[in-house]
Length: 345
Image (cartoon, rainbow, N blue to C red; front, side, top):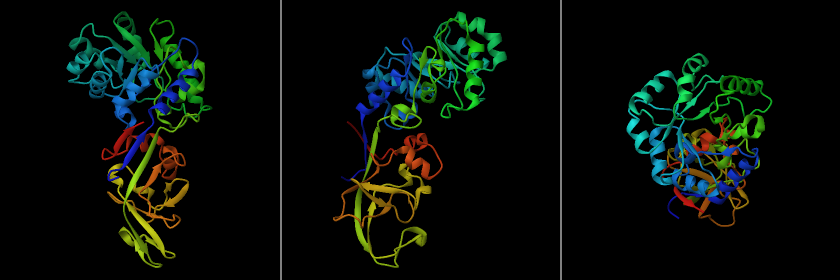
């Protein structure tokens, strides 16, 4: 095995979608968010697997992602663009039959001028202050927008991964105030919102990270396994150092494997001296620094020199690694490098 192998369990992905779909009330549609190239896993295989599981609507971040998804998914299923209609997007939106979620009056003007009669949605700011139309702009534009080919009105929760956070109820109330009685399909919840309960589900939910095995969906099946090939093993004598900066000194004679991945492949340098890799059920700690293309791993506990070691596996998921460096599983997933050989299982 000369190339790092990223194994992607499409059946686990499908099971996670089915589990989140089962959390919703009857009549609520469960869509799927597949932005950032399917959270780093490959948007074509991911979206097609989710469509086979039952997803009938998809969300991406920008029009270029939507066009790539349309080419992979086929002509029929709706694809929404969270970023709305940006300057220069008209040809992509029209050609790929995308639905931009208009975020501001200038996007409304741009879309109406470039693509009159083309369907759109509207994203509202219910308190996150990131994307979405402000309440006063919505009040002024709603009568006209709701009369047009408006496919969806949505907003996004800021603190859905903290069920007791007061911001959840505050945003729910504001979203209801802005949208009750509109007669248009509504969406408020991604993964965290799905888990908050049916008050947050409205007509469409749009889970993302939970599909890929990440928190806050505790019942998710792991979707990825990252297996990194060993280039070389050596004996490091007691007192010798390993890697840049002499950052690790061997406390006793040990066997060290050098493996073929590094920070150029999305393995954060901040994991230096913190992360463990696995050979089956045997932990093998990283020693020395994460470098651009290489990691050095203590394999003294193994009887034989290994052919590969796992960074992501049943013993260690994306959130476990994220916790080591104070980040989130989303960042670990979407950083997975393009040099990996993605194997769909």
